[in-house]
Image (cartoon, rainbow, N blue to C red; front, top):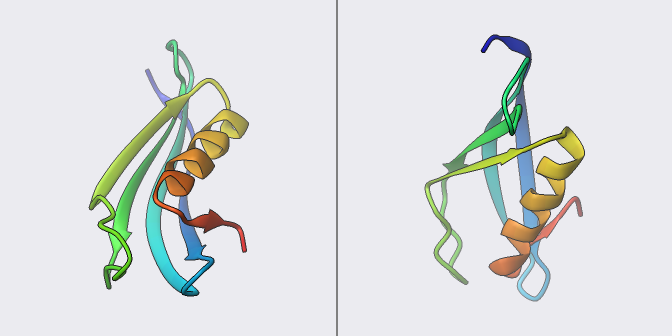
Length: 85
C-alpha cells in the first residue's frame, strides 16, 4: 500500500456546558488500496480537561474522508464534546 495523500489536521472541540476546550493533532492518510483506505491517527494536545478523561491517542479508519469525520464527531460526542464550534 502506498500513500496517495497525507496531511496534518488540528482538531478542536468544546464542552458546551463549561466552555472547556480540547485539541488533538491528527495525521490523515489516504492509501491506494485496502478495505479501509483512509485513516486518521490522533494524538492529544495537553492540557487535559477537568470534565472528563480523554484518551492520549485514538485511531479512526474508514472508506472515505467523510466517513472518518462522521466517526470523529461520534467519538467526541461520547465524551460530551462538540466538534466544529
